[in-house]
Image 1 (spheres, one colour):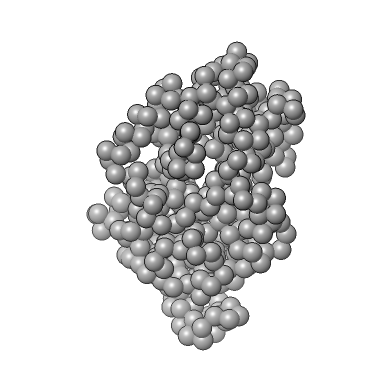
Image 2: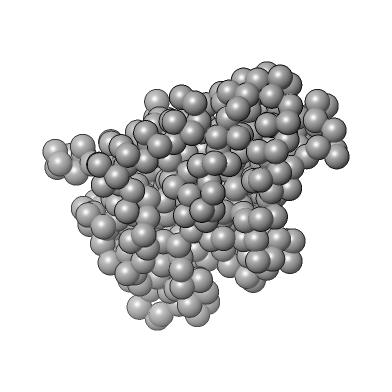
Length: 362
C-alpha cells in the first residue's frame, strides 16, 4: 500500500516571496534562476519512490530548506506498485508523479524509456558514465548487495565471504538451515527479480549455486524489512541479496544482525530516477533531481540516510571511494542502460522465473 506524506509531516514550511528564493547553486548555469523561479510558482513536486520515508525524510527536509515555498509530496510504495500505478495513470491521463525514483532498476529504466523527458542535469560531470542513460534516467546511489546473518546463531568462523562459501555452508548443514535461509521472492519483488538476473550475469554457475543454497529450503519474502526482521529474531538464520544500505542502518541499533560483503563479486545497485514527460511540476522536478544528485543531497543520503553516494567527493567513507577502498574489484555496479531491459520481455522473464523456481525448489 502506498503512503503519501505531505510536507507538513516532514518539515514545517514557510512561504516566502519570489525575491527570497535561493540563488542557483555554485557552478550552475546563470539561467538556472529561471528554473528556480518557475518551480516556486509551481509550488510543489510529486515524487513516486521506493525509498522509504524514514530514509528519505532528511533529503526531503534538506530540499525544502534549500527551496522554501516548494512542497514535496512524497509517495512511498513498493517497486511493483510504483510501476503499475505510474503506467495506469499515464494511460488514463490523470495526475501522476513528476519524478520517479525506483530501486528496481530494470522496471525503472523501462518506465524511463517510455515516459522520461530528456534533461541534462548540471551535476552530470560529477556522475559515473555508467549511471546516466541518454540524459533521461539517472542512477542516484551506490548500494552494495550483501548477506545478512544472525550473529547469535552463526559462529564468526562460519560467516560466508562469497556466494560459493554461502552455498557450501548451507549444503554442509542442511538440518540447521532447513527453511532458515531467506531471499526475495522474485515473482513478487521487482527488485528481487532484477538482482537475481544480475547474479546470473555475474556468475556462470549461478543456478547451481542457488540450488545448493536452497537445499535446506528457502523462505522467500517481498521486502528487505521482513527479511531483516526474521534474521534478527532467529526465525531465519541467513539472508542473501539484501540491500546493504538498509542492513547497515539497522545493524547500528540491532546487535543480532551481522553483515557480510561477498568478496567474489558484490553487486552494486543504483536507484534510478527520471522526470516524467507529463510532469505537472516540471521545473520543481528538475530542482529535486539536481538536489538528489548534488554534493549536498548525496551527503545527506550518505551520512544521514545511510545510503551510499555514487559521487567520490562526499565527506566520510559512505561513497564510491570509501567502498572501493573496502571491496576493490569485487564491486560490480549495475549499469543504467538497455541491458536492464533484456529480461523484461514476457517470454524471457517467464522462462527465467521457471529456471529460478526449479533451482530454488519452489
